[in-house]
Length: 444
Ligand code: NDP
Image (cartoon, rainbow, N blue to C red; front, side, top):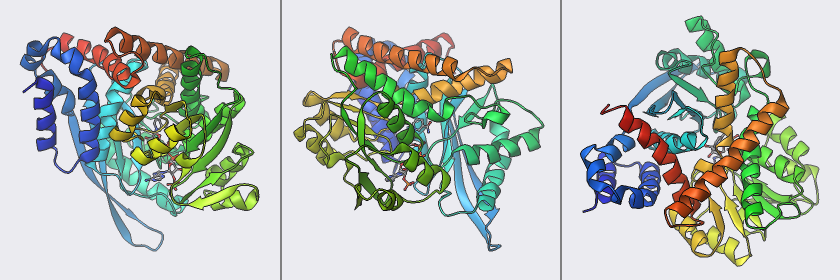
């Protein structure tokens, strides 16, 4: 049996009931096959793939907190420090009822390659909890965040592990987490990113993942002789990534006609009104039904459906496995030309394969949503320097990083004989840097 297949079997046997983790490992190892098989015995001897697919450390802890009725609540929490070969662990915290160890491991594993692709010195990690901030009062969210950090602070630090936001963790949660870290450690250090601007945050960090996604999409299309301006775009999600992807796509002349949340989706033929969307999601923390109430020309549909609309470009920005084979078929039938992932692993393996086989330009999230973590790394640099860069400076660096990532994955796909396969290009380019550092540092 080939070394890649051996390790895939091992990962599945040793990590039962973690399908998202298996999926992420399978996608990466399948595209590394060509690299590994060129020097299989060396990699097998070093147990390189076993080391790469086994986290350095997995921290599981209980978070007890008291709700507004005086009832004590208990949540499960996780921090997986996956690989620090090229820098301190870096990756977001997700607060969502679906969170479990397997999901955090899939996200942490993906993060290794994404962080490597940014070209910045950051390793891979991820964390979170099955706590649901939705419907909780600010006091309840604060109580949860303080209890969460009272345990997590033992394992993180500006040169050790630097968490950030993800689903359910935005500016409010980062503020509460940072306040508690500082209170316990007495350290004013850049231990979290996505901080508010008045206490060490970076300009453009809020917008970075969505903006970066669109910068990469623009470059991808440009290199295929296509102009993003004038194109019709479908976006899923209505959170941080989706909102700023919509904003930047519209600034660059595209028309975004959809967005969604976990209850339903909006079709707005006139183009999504991003100011209204921000007011609903960022200020009122309300549902998308409010969008249709405010804009009678827009349609609100319950359930899924964003990918059934006829568009040129699809940007999935909600969550994992939200774009399946049927959705991929609908996009192809409707003449879409590109699918560029804003979320982490939003496209199932079968859907990815179908899109690629049907000539759709497809870029995986680990490349196209890396703008968020890249700007987090820029926030770390500013914190270390005790300086703040201007928005123009950060935005220009973000754009440069995204353009560079596209060319990097494109070059890798060509070098390994898989031109246009950006999944393989991203996995190989991300892997080579990490593996080089791992080998240089010996068996650890
Ligand atoms: P937010 O919490 O801000 O928004 C998530 C959006 O997706 C919401 O509209 C939410 O709807 C929807 N959503 C979440 N879970 C589901 C689900 N199970 N089914 C349908 N819709 C769902 O998160 P972000 O925008 O920060 O993150 C979105 C994706 O992007 C995630 O995959 C995340 O890992 C990834 N990402 C985020 C980065 C960042 O900088 N924030 C960086 C890189 C990747 P509802 O409000 O109804 O739950």
